[in-house]
Length: 419
Image (cartoon, rainbow, N blue to C red; front, side):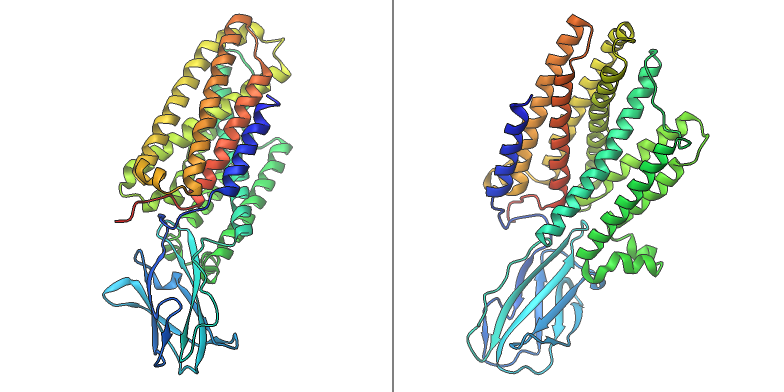
C-alpha cells in the first residue's frame, strides 16, 4: 500500500500539471466579437458585440471596458433582440488608443466563465488580448477542495449509515444518526460553516456576486436559474431536517438518500442533451459510489474496533456485503460510462487531451485498482474469516482520490467536437 498510493498521487499530479487544456469545451465561450481581438478601428466604434456559444440572461452578464489610461468607461449592455447569445455594449466617445474589454458570464450549467481581449482605435494595439477562463486558479481549486470535503463527507456518511443499517440486521454494530449526541452537533456546525465557505467562494466567481444578491433580495425564481446555488440551499434545508431528534430511523435513512441526491443536480447536468437520462445516470453514480465507499468505511470501523468480538458474525455478513459491493461497483461503472456518452464521446476525449480527459483516464485506473483490491480482500476474508485492514485502506484511499477527480471533472469543461 505504501508504494502504490504515492505512485497514484504522482501520476495524478503529473497529469494535472502537464496536461494543457484544449479550447474545445462544453462551457460557454466567446465565438466572435466586434471589434475583433487585436483589431485596429479607423473610426471610433459606438458599440461592441460579443457573440457567445449559448443564449445568456442579461443579469448574469458583466462587461467592463478600460481606456489607454486604465480608466473604466461607462457602458450600457443589452442582449440582441433576436439572438440572446449576442451581448451589445454601448460605448461613449472614444479617444485614440488601446481598449481592453473584460467580460464575465454564467454558463447554462451554472459555471462562471470570464475573459478579456483588446482592440484599438486609430493606432496599433498596445497589449495582447487575454483568453477566456473559467475562474481564478486559486479560487477554482479552493472551491473544488471544499466541494470534495462537503460531498465526500455526505456520500461517506450516507453509505456508512445505510451499510450499518443492513449490518445491524445481521447482529453487527449499528451506527445511527441521532443528533442528541454532542459530537454530531459539532460535526453539523462544522458542515454548515463549510457550506457557507462554499457559497461565498462560488458567489465570488459569479457576475456581480449574483447568487448572494438574489438570495438577500428574496428573488428565489431568479436564484433557481443558478443550479449550484439551489443545490447548496437544498442541502442545508435537508440537513436541518436531519437534525430533528427522536425520529424513527427510517426518517434519517430517507433524508440521507435525498441529501446525497442533491449532488446530482449541479454542474454538467443542465448542459446535457438528455437531462432525464443524465439525471438517472448521475443518481446511480452517486448512490452506488456512496454505498461502495461507505461500505469500506464501515468494514474499517468494525475491523479497527470490534473485529475479535464479532468475527463469526462478520463471516456471515460477507456474502451480503460482497453482493452489495458487486452491485454498487457494477452500477458505478455502468453509470459512469453512460455519463461519458451523454456528455461527450470517445472521439472528443482522444482528440482533445484536456484536463477532463486525463482525469477520466486516472479515475478509470483508480476504479480498476479498487476492484483488484476488493477481489483480494474478499478472497482473504473468505479464507481467513477476518478483514485485511491494509487492503481496505488502500481501496478506500483509491476511492477518495477518484471522488476528488470526479468533483474536479464536474467543475471543468468536458471536451466536445466542433459542430
